[in-house]
Image 1 (cartoon, rainbow, N blue to C red):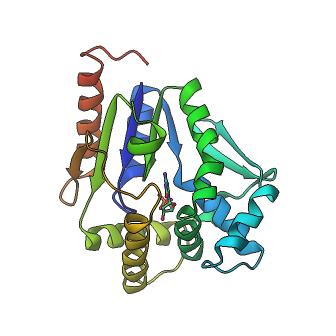
Image 2: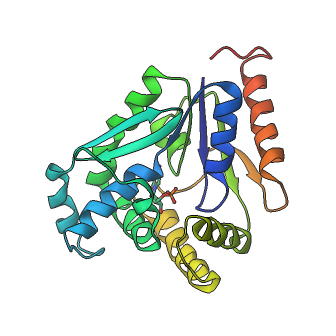
Length: 225
Ligand code: DC
């Protein structure tokens, strides 16, 4: 079983995907964490976000390993688990910048496909239904109004102890949306066969139930994963 969930940041992809994975007993793959990890490394080298050649020059020095420990994904950068350090707002901006560089996408492609080959997965990102898993059993394009998304992200950051103002989160989200949607490679757009879902007015539970229903329907009523 392969479920692809794409959509802009703050649409609730990870909350929904985590809940679906738990319910169906499949693996949740957060692909944004991989771009964040590359972004983290680039920033730690003092390279500017706009410096594409600098970003590419980092790649030979990056080894990324993804492990699943007690159902949770851990991404190791050169042997170190970065935890929530990749969630900082500045790293979000770096992740968006590095994700527009074709060599970075190519670099992360195999890792993502390999996980999906060896596990039943629900994978979230921006190009899962279009590039990574074009034959996924279920494809969903999840979105919500930008205000709802910025509000959720501000709360999420506060829960992680990261202090961020709503106005700043909103502005950065707009910039990221533009970058991710308008880039030349693998832009964050819905696959033609993806089901659009706007969850501005839905709870995580409602959205999760809707995705599970779609997965069951795709599996012909009986879900074997
Ligand atoms: O989902 P996220 O906010 O953690 O993703 C961080 C950035 O990585 C986002 O701005 C776009 C990029 N990304 C991508 O280009 N393709 C993916 N499959 C996942 C994330």
